[in-house]
Image 1: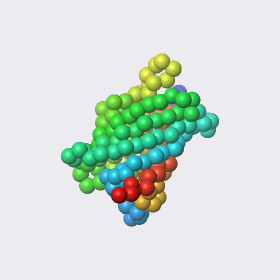
Image 2 (image 1 turned 90 degrees about the vertical axis):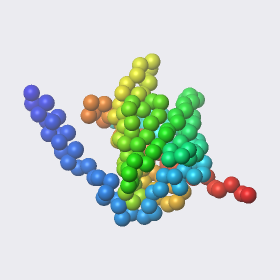
Image 3 (image 1 turned 120 degrees about the vertical axis):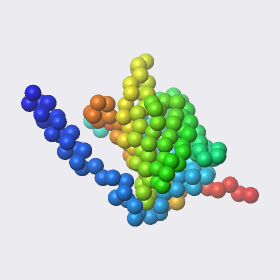
Image 4 (image 1 turned 135 degrees about the vertical axis):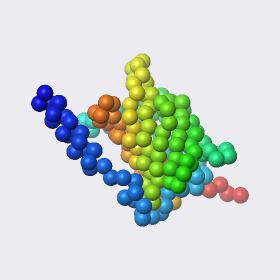
Length: 178
């Protein structure tokens, strides 16, 4: 019983420390997803488990296009162990600064909000691990550093327990010469 009380108090304290995306409303440059992904993007990242061990490193090539009101991101992952993965996001603006997204391995829809240079995404991911599938919660923060660079930090959790973090650096590629 005492452990349960300590766990509940800890979760309450953690939830009280969350900064909302509006905190970044005055930060510049302002993030415009369509503009940022108007050119090919490369990203480099890693996953650290909750003890801080780097479990996976990866490189991502991202091609994008606009179809009507949708921004399509075609992501191709190459992991340090040689495995490959592809994820295609379909993103839609749903209001001022608000976005929703879908991908094959996202359970339901991702919901996000942009303010200033920051984007905060939340979604549930169907994650294959050792032949099994786990639904994990993703709390994803992206920060536009300059017109060509985004830094991304995602906390992955299950049942409120942090499993680890994903750190990513996105870099837009130079514009093609005519």
